[in-house]
Structures are given as C-alpha cells and as structure tokens.
Image 1 (tube, protein in one colour):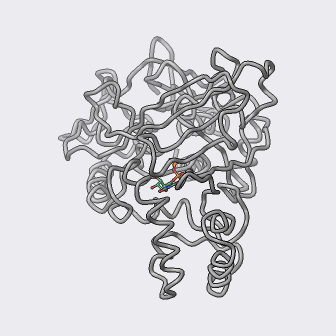
Image 2: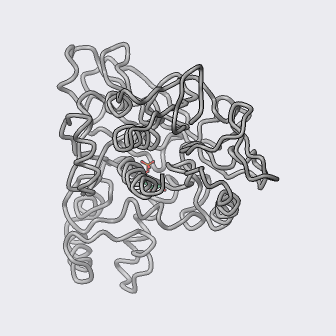
Length: 398
Ligand code: UDP
C-alpha cells in the first residue's frame, strides 16, 4: 500500500492509454485493488485519443485509429465498455496519377495493367497461391516466375519503397520484414484494409471507451503528472524509488523503457510524426477514408474523418476535416518531435531492448505493458490482448 495526495492505493499504473487503462480496470474490478493511474498528458487515451473538432467532426488527434480484431476475448471484453459503429477501413494508393486499392490486390492489378496482361498475371498468381492468400511483398519478390517477379518489382517500387523510406527513414530491407508484411499483397478482390472478424469504431469514440475503462470507483486518474520525474531505479539496491521513497507495490509501466532506466544503456530509437489538420469546405475531400501517397508528396497519407462515422455528424453541410501525416525522427529534446509513435525494428534495436529487459528482471514489482514499454508494433487489439494476458498471469501472483 502507498499514499498519493493523502489517499491510499495498492497498485500504480503509469500511462492512461489502452494498455494502462485495461490493466487499471482489471486490477480494480477483479482484485478489488485501489489503482492510481498517472498520465503525463492532460487527456486520457494515449495516442488513441479522439475528440470532436470545432466543426463537430470526430478527429483522431494522433492519426487514424481503426479498430479490428479476431481475438474473441478482446472483442467480448471491450463490448462491456462501449457500443460500436460498424466500420471497415478502405485505403487507396495514389500511384502514377491513378487511385488503386491498398493492400495491392487483384483489382489493383486491373487498375495498372492492360486487360490481357492483367488476366495473365492474375492466372499466374492463382496457379501459385490460394484465392484469398496474403503474400508479403518481400516474399513475392523471391518468386521464380519471371512475369510475377516483374509484377512484384512494380508493387515494391511503386507502393512500398518510397512510402517506407518516408515512414521509417530507411529501405524496406533495413527494417524487420514484419513491418511491410502488415500490408501484404492480397490474392482476392477484397478491397478492405483489414480482414479481421470484428471491425468497428467505438460509438462514443476511443476517448469514451477509455473513459469507461477507467470509470471504476477504485480507480483514480491524475492527469498532467509525468511519473518519470517521480520514479527512479536505485541500481545498487535493485529498488524502485517513487516520490522520494522506496516503492514495493506493483507498478505497471507503459512509457518508454529507455527513459525508465534514464537511458543508461543508450536510447531506443523511435519514429515520430507531425500531423497537419485541415478543414475544407467541400462535402467530401477524397473517395475513401485514407489515401496513401507513396511517391508524390512529403506526407505518407491523408485521412478524411467524415468517412468513419458520417452518422455522428449532425450538421452535414460543415465541410470536411482531413489530416496529413509527415513522418520525422523522434527527438526527446525537440518538443515538435518528442512523441514516440513507432519503435524502429531492426536487429540492433532489438538487442538493446533485450539488454534493458535483462536489467529489468531485478525489479520484481515492475511490469511492462504496451507499445512503448515492450518496444512492439502493437495494434490496439494486440495492446488490449497483451494487457488481459499479462493481468491473468499477475493476478495469480498478487
Ligand atoms: N506500407 C507501404 N506502403 C503503403 C502502406 C504501407 O510501404 O501504401 C508499409 C510501410 O513500411 C508501413 C508498413 O507498410 O510503415 C505498415 O503499414 P500500416 O498501414 O500498417 O502502418 P500504420 O497504420 O501502423 O502506420
């Protein structure tokens, strides 16, 4: 048990994003623990945070978040905290002046190749892959079929190469293959971006959903408190110091792992983004929610929010809000670049992460969850699943 501002708590959760909020909810409802959540931002929800803009359009402050999952446990768990608006994400890529479906699929082939050549390519693909197969581009590039090799080079050069250079600051073969495999070539005419069983957005927004997760009477959320200023690890004694005192209660940490260790082993690299929101007076700005610009612009994609929940917008004549995403390096010193969005996956960074994990083992009451702390490219459902699974293990021990 520990005290904070005159009240007593049993567990400390650092960060009020999806991962931290699920952990807080589980501890409060399943263990009856009193939970203190410290969040450095003025709002909850982490990078899923959304809100209505001045025009009554729900925007995602930190870029588009579209929920999709095939995990039954995640779906049934979240259903206790929100109603859903059915939504299946669609993306087009702007390539050589044309718009074609992304992930690249059989319809995309039709968009770029003359009819007879497209037919030939599709039949060659179907000879090798089952209808509906999803083939990572780096795998398709290794094909021994000469025509399919040319097709894969076209897709690689036109869709992946420059987008990945912009997004990650390096070529696709310099980051983990899992990154480009998130958007495989799809051997079907299914134009949806995701193929999971459940696809929807929370009817009252992600902020509303996280608010409900944190609404339990045992949970207290303190915003605008940067816990890393209060927390330090005393290496010589393997003790955690919180607010000037040794801390022996459970801590769930969702922030950056290198920061927790005061960067003693070096910095774990992240990629950041700059978002440019624009409001246009037109009814609709583009044909789908997201249009990717692999080659033509400094931004990677434009997302138009009105496509996601048109029903929510009461005044349909107000125009439309879009956001452009400009990838940039992360820098903790520079306030315009200091939000870490993506861990950068390569062997060197994985190694450094593992070194930090080794150090962490000594602190038995400290548990890491989430994209930043675990240095993993979690989708929202992965983050929820990971927190649920971590709690299942912890609850037996505490
Ligand atoms: N990607 C690409 N071109 C595209 C879409 C994706 O090269 O048109 C690659 C790029 O490396 C990107 C990765 O696939 O970072 C994963 O894309 P996803 O849409 O999953 O990224 P997120 O929405 O997480 O930013």
